[in-house]
Length: 101
Length: 159
Image 1 (cartoon, one colour):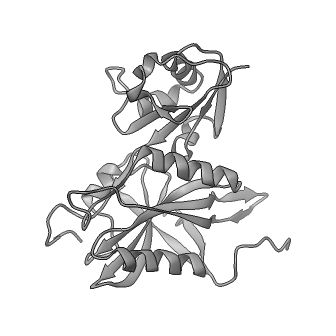
Image 2 (cartoon, one colour):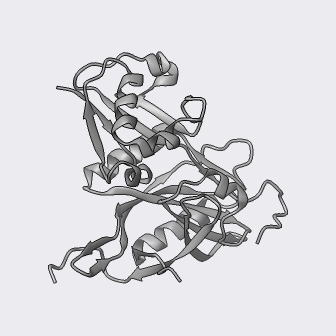
C-alpha cells in the first residue's frame, strides 16, 4: 500500500506523461518531496524558489484542502489520495471599457 | 513555422458553450472541457478532442462581468467527472461579455500552459466569435489553435 498522487494534465509533461504516482509517505510534504525527486522538472511548477508551495497550486487530501488541515504537515496514510489542483481564473481586463485587443 | 494546434469539438458542444455565454450575460460563464489530448500513432495524428463539458458557476462576486474564477473543489469535481468518463480535463471555456474573443492580460497571468482555453465573445447578449488558445510554456504569450467543429456526435466508428 502507498499514497497515490494524482497529477493534473498541465503538469504531466513534467512528470514523464504520468497521470498518477505512488509513494510511501507519512505526510503531504514527504509525498511531494518523493514526487519532485522522481520528477525534478515538476519542482519549479509546484514550489517557489524559497521552497513554498505556489499560491496557484492547491493540494487536497481525500477531498480536503490541506490549507484547512495541517498544511504540508498533514499526515497521510496508506490508501490516501493526494490531488494537485491548479487554480483556474481569467476574464477580460479590469477596465470596464476594455481597451485590450 | 510551428504547426498550428487543433482542437476538435462537436457542434452540439459548441452550441452549449455559446448558450451558456448568452445565459449568464452580462456576466462571464465558465466551465471545463473534457476529452482527450492529441494522439500520434504511426505517423497518423488525431487532434485534441473535446467529448464533454462540465459547466461551472462563476465564483467571482466582486466583478463577474469581467472576471471568472472557480474553486479548487470545482476543479477537483471536473477532474473526477473526466476520470469517470475515461477522459481528462483538456481545458476551460469562458465568455467575454462585450469584449472580443481574445485572451486578456489577466487571462495570461492566470493561465496554465498545455490547457486549451476556449473564449466566446458575447456582444449585447448574443454569442458571436469563438476562439481557442494555448499559453506557451514560457508563459509569455498565447498561440491560437484551430477549432475544428464536428457535425456528427463524438462516437467511435471504428474506421
